[in-house]
Length: 319
Image (cartoon, helix red, strand yellow):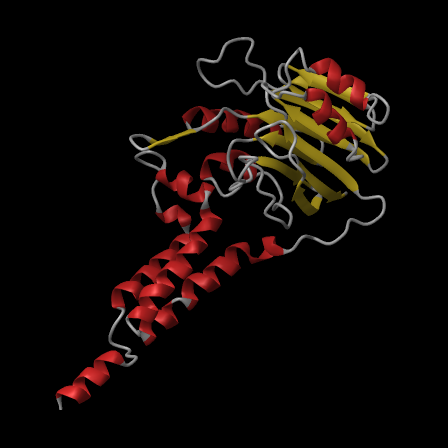
């Protein structure tokens, strides 16, 4: 009789693994509704949303106790986070295919203000043959290298502060966009707006570099200045009279981050592809964004590394 009970204990059962099953349910809920996590203290909600796709790694972790416990319940419950992950991110697995001939291509890159070889970075970006190239952390000493490398194929350009835009198409209506958070000085200029006169019509192009965020064990995600700047950028885009808008920038956040909602809520859904861009040596998040209004991003991808701590991001658009 004792041997029979021992054999039953070693067999698979629906009664064991309840804790693992509950964890599966929790992970699935967070994947679908990360807003359940409050943003105070320490903006933990935004921190979760920044790395939300990686929450799928909980599945193989939870598979282990399900197998060790020989639990039918926990094993079946694993289907919940798997389904939730594919519901939220499955569409991003597609690369979008090859761009059709004549596609409108844009490139976004934070070139780094400590880039050891800005000339090489400039040549690499010019070689993409993109219609628009947006840059952040563009310093005065590095500017001539970018002007020289792009002059032939991108004869139109504009810079304001540390952001710049190079274009194959004429640019008009160039102006500074004030996205300074409280306490930023007069020289803190990280936003510009221009009208690109393309064969498909006029497009309002915004280039922005939102303030950096910091992660610390004691304080969590310090994104207050970033969120404040995002609200100002959202106000500028909401007031934009042109219907078609392209926003290119280092927004220091992912499109899932609720701190960027003042901007992301005004734009169309992002295109297929994860295109993680930061940090360049081991990218885990895309904080360099290509967002549109009344235009469709058909493909987005990260480009090879330059001398920056960010990867360039390229996107094909359907106008």
